[in-house]
Length: 270
Ligand SMILES: [Zn+2]
Image: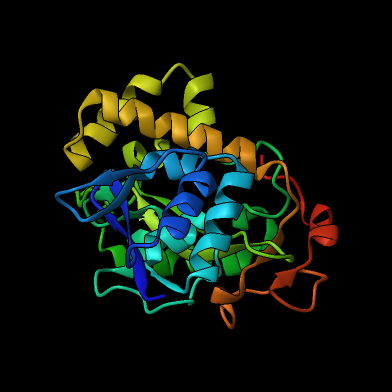
């Protein structure tokens, strides 16, 4: 079967040649969340529903697209937990798709409280950290890499951005890039902390300002981020920092790929 699974705006569209059996299979795999859309000539479901779907639903949908050899776009691959690279990435900036933020685009993020080794500052040698910081802030040219505001170097913060490879074991938490963010944008990447500090309103404000979203949409995104965080806590992740190969070294560890079992040696996130 030749078909596609694409994200179009806030919807996911499944298109494939008509087959009663396949239609039925897709309905069941999606937990009865898809509906036929005449105008788009495909089955649609909200992208947010896909992100928020239970793991077994995502796994069934992943099995469906693989079984029927659908061409799955980048966003949907990530949402399904397929290994990135199953199909060709789109032309638009891949970074934004992988990590949930890019120039003029921002989605909330939330890390589990104890995520060993995922705060670079505490993992790498202080000299490496200073060099990396200088590199990142220098590249950003004193502007937040998301909202573009000139922030003044003292207010820009270095922030690690991650992707998560679900798929089959090993599951990998991979550092994709280190970016410079203003305080407002960075707050959206630590929803738990913002909630604890009573600053969720500020997160909503930043999400609406950067993305031109309604407050409702921003709140849904925060819910999605917190849900994903809960979900991520249910599994063990290998840590892959190899994007910084040649720039940093981890004291006492030979490579920048740390199996889940060794992560506690690297120190707490907080
Ligand atoms: Zn910003």
